[in-house]
Image (cartoon, rainbow over all chains, first blue to last red; front, top):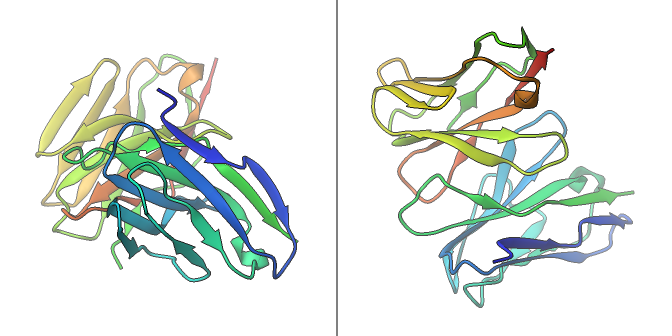
Length: 113
Length: 110
């Protein structure tokens, strides 16, 4: 099993550009999450999904969009990138019933200049 | 806003000592409590979970929960340099999401 796979690992964007961070998991987990982590800070929840076709906002959703068309994939879309979106983004998943055991991807480091 | 508070540290302990990491949370409805470890440049990994008041031991790690005081702690006995990392406290209020604290950096010196 590959677990949770995120791409790309690194990306530099110019202000105003758009991009999609890809996340896929092969563990058949229902729940998937996108977090961002700024230096010296904890993880802030951007969006989450409890199953295919269902998504919901987290704590910091502005400037982002998500979709969940399949159980495996949960892409995060950044529209009109801003310097404030410079961060490390983590995708995570978990099975139903284990409410705190998140399986994380390796992270995607995004810089907006 | 549901808050999880941790001292950012760094907490410095010598090798072989006990490291004590603390966390408080604001939502009394929180049901489950977790400690994640994050090495620099890596993703977080779950090391302990606790659901009821009292202590839970797993090897060198002990998690302590006091719901009345809204307090969770993690003790690491016989600390090793390999324990040097940031420790994230996380709670769930019974819904689908997990709220993380900012983390405490632990430095274990040989």
